[in-house]
Length: 485
Image 1 (cartoon, rainbow, N blue to C red):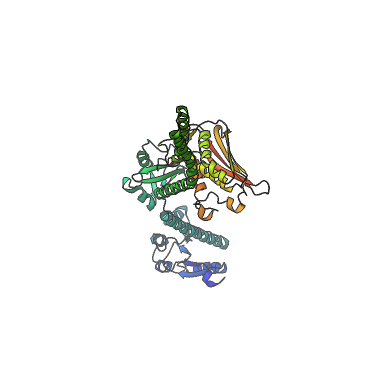
Image 2 (image 1 turned 90 degrees about the vertical axis):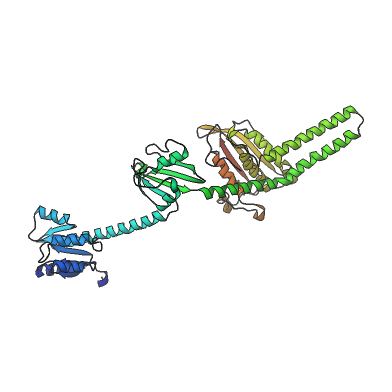
């Protein structure tokens, strides 16, 4: 072993023969030894940061106990392990006094060489472990204070133990973190609740603080969440919610823009019919004929009004969740896209069986299903069919509604499947925003449902099927479920 890598040991003993014997044993075990015959010299050499100090109790100028105490009280030398030795102070009281002064070990003469080496090795291992623990603690402290999320450690009574700077910043002027204060009581008051958590239960929720949105998460610390302490994570999600709203709005506008051609075609036909019927009524001399022409014109105007209402549903929504008839909503969506599908020689079919109502926002659901139906008609080859099926099913112990939209297109490539729900990912180049499926999945999740798909590229059996499941019954929507736009 090169000399520079040898652990350095300071041997402080008033007897030269003792220093020689100890040095010889430890040098033979691979250690570099220094010697001191007085307490003053031992204190001086301790400043050179040896890896371990062997300190005799009886020194000519200063007691070994006093030297040990001074070394341990000095911040520069306090971490050096000290092995106290003595030939005359061998009682239990002497051992206790040495350990109370800060010694890490105590041996009495005569000292067995194997016991000496083993003790030295154990103390050096302890020092390495302590150094590693200190470094880890510093790294953890730095990481703890560098996080953008606010973190706080709470005791069993929800009182603050420690917190990072981001926690204090997110809390703002309404709550000044101090040891012993209960931040959960403050957040509960802001949310208008008596309390957020009871006992060791987990909690995750969103609250509004002034003009900000804050996400809270509380969980127990310890094995399987059974520890008495809790960790509180506070995140300012205001920017994220604004970005999310902006992207959802952009996708809604994009979806409406894609409907413009189909809507113009749908409205143009009945308008032409109304114009012709009014002309015929004006030119007719028969009261019955005029009545028939005007009745037919009224029917065409009702058709225009229905198309207008369906289109507005993509922009305007209810202010609170309502019972939604999914079958009726799907029929309206299919009616909007029938004309554009027919222009591609694709037949759009709906097979809707009665299903229980879904509690939610019809405008958001219409946006989701419109996006899926449009994607299916764009993927379907000419002369094929796109089938929309609505069924009531039992899932997770309850009743819900399943919507399946199937096309006979080329299928979804494997390389695309993993990213199909990613924001801004699109295979339509400049024709797509890449937000449709991402927004759709988020809107369905806020209705406590899910969206998934399966696909095949096999020749003769290719196609894709998207399935949307929505649970029935009245339930609170996830935070942000209502589209405030």
